[in-house]
Image (cartoon, rainbow, N blue to C red; front, side):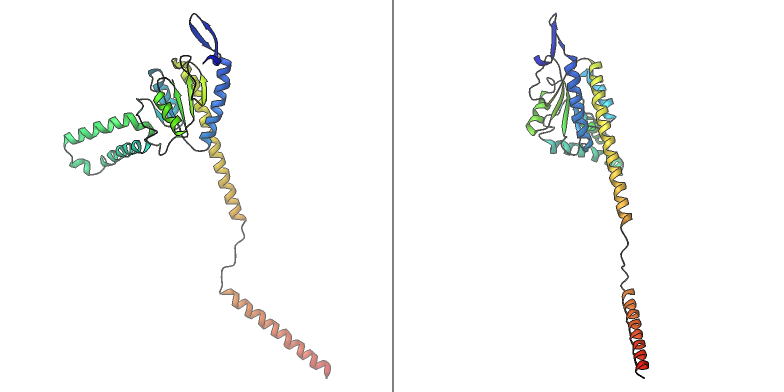
Length: 257
């Protein structure tokens, strides 16, 4: 983290905020483009200071997040995670039909506890149907397993990196204090605003494309598809031509006479 440290005072490293601003702008622009493309960014923040902030702000832009313990293999063994999510959905479906009434109280209690456990671990990623396009991590030391899995799969990593961490392996480093809730809230506000901007631009582009498509359809001229009219038209033309020829023959006979 040496390049991002402004000075050291009383054993405390002070981050160079000018470099932090530059890095935030770079990260926000990259994340905006990912959101604009329609792909998902997975946010990971299991530390106490950041959990509630991430759940509130990231949930507001409909992005997946993990605020409980990172389930090992969540990325590298993604199909298994999806099976667990589908199981949770199956329980929800079962609770609404008649099969739920057939179960005993004990079975209902066991299933409800299982559903609650799955919801706590995976409820915030239930809409993540495929691997995320990127990870945003608060505290790379605490979330080192998530970082390792992302790097193994070639998924870019955005991260708040404190002075006690190393930025190696992080694609977009945001030098900042990941222990202060105000710092986490400020940086997440910039990132979520960038995501919202990207989603808005995507919506505008899609609406514009739809309008242009409608205009192109309206400009196309209708083609004649009634095949029954064509022979009748041809017969009328032939009759008119025959009448003209007969009229010309009559005129020729009158001239000779």
